[in-house]
Image (cartoon, rainbow, N blue to C red; front, side, top):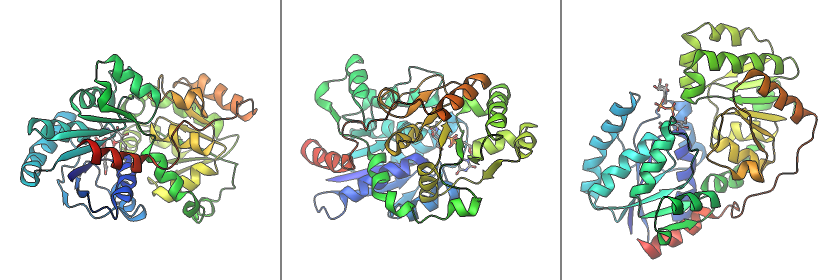
Length: 363
Ligand code: UD1
């Protein structure tokens, strides 16, 4: 079975790493790896390939950054000839980024089976570009692999035939569990002068948070309070860096003496940083899941989550972006009144193997 695997943006690399481990040594699966080039910085892309032992992409479409329409259209244009040349049995896409929907659309229009890994997640917030990508990709996929039961339920409500849908667990967690020991060797805490369990990690990259000065300013006001209690490490996503440097907020965060600003970190450094943190503040989707497994309290700086299991049984709280709400949630978390988090069903490190078995049976 020949299967084209598509990656474009940072979280995709992690998910594909799990699948490539499951494909390794299997003579019955011939994987082809296509990098769309949506993320291209060394820190956002190359480092992940190296640390996670993902093979060099068979091709890189080198689309780079652009508006949503241009980026999506360019990926489609460039992927069309790749798909028609390779004539794969299936195209597999992961997550919810522009590369996911762009390559998905090209595949189905060529009559190629489309496989979506991390299907069914819904924030029910259509202002999020990822939500549009999720809904559209799921509606055209032939096989849909879900990380949690809410995904299965959402797909059923949207009328997707249940025989196409499989609850398999979480490939991102496969990678985390495989790399947890290795991450212990990271020197990132020493490099930043931090002690274990005595700092907060912050990540921000959602357009709704970082492209809006009022929202971003409100979050930074909360960070100003928190950094007076304990160090805050803030690896800055390129989108956020652009936003900060084009306003006075860049200077504001630089003036906070207990905030450590860093480039985007490698996978292993970031895993070590999360594992040893007291609290993680984030607007990322994947980090809500990773902190659940690590049992580190996560305060999600959004109004909603497409990953409700992390709140129901994990360590995640949905806090929003208002200054007072963030500070109050931080204080509550520090006072230790948190339920003991549980591990979601099937987040056991074997999701990718389950996917490979089902692919062989169904494609
Ligand atoms: C994308 C995904 C988002 C995912 C995130 C992870 C979409 C719609 N969004 O958002 O779901 O959570 O990746 O990081 O697909 N840039 C660089 N170097 C890079 C990549 C980007 O400098 O390697 C800068 C560019 O200025 C670019 C901006 O970051 O315009 C945004 O990049 P883009 O790929 O449009 O989306 P992300 O915000 O990274």
